[in-house]
Amino acid sequence: MYQAGRSLFLLTFNFIPVKKALVLGASGFVGRYLVDLLLANPSYEKVTIVVRRDIGLEDPKLKTLIADFESLPKMKEAIEADEVFITLGTTRKKTPDRKNYYQVDHDYPVLATRIARERGASSVFLLTAVGADAGSGTFYLRTKGETERDVIGVGMDHTHIFRPSMILGERTEFRLLERIVIKIWPLAEGLLKLSGLSKYRGISGKDIAKAMVNAASKQSGKVEIYEWKRMKELVG
Image 1 (cartoon, rainbow, N blue to C red):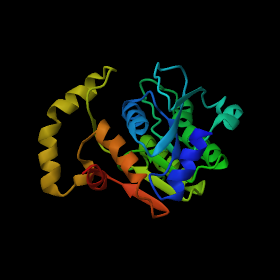
Image 2: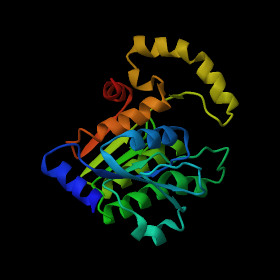
Image 3: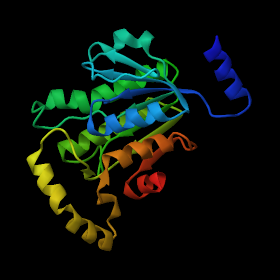
Image 4: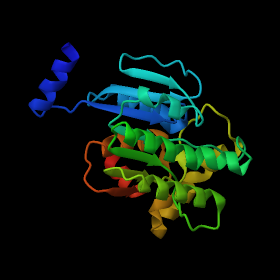
């Protein structure tokens, strides 16, 4: 009774809106930052995460659903969301089979968006990659592009797509090649800045998460694309 009255009071007097967020990819590098920011944000009264296994996170506002691509449709009734944030993704090393890779990077985000829309969500925030293009000859970029295309096709009131290049920051997972690239990245950053190719500049996982949450507070367009410059503007 108290919570319902509080929500009505806030909405009636145009105070901070009380929203419900759904997050897929909460155990990932960007997703972990994203969940922390949403839980700390007073605009959200509930944050539901969908994970394959319990990640040991506890908070009064947090609801954890244990599910995967196959079982998510059966848990539809447990989902409450105004906004869905999707930071799902895998690597060829983890998922060498192209069919399984496509399921994680394409099928799952599209399915989650459809279910969230059926459950009342009006906005989706999707993490893809710079260069995403459904017509690309590169499997990785084509998959990202097809995911963007099909998530947009679900028809949310607002679709926000975030396209980072190199995602910077300390990961718990060891990736040798990525760590080498990050070490030399400052040199590449200078060249990208001078050449006007700012969309290829690196951005931290934490800043991507901040940009996604901040974008949710200022929605207007039907479809919005955020590359490096727009993400940095959102972070401030």
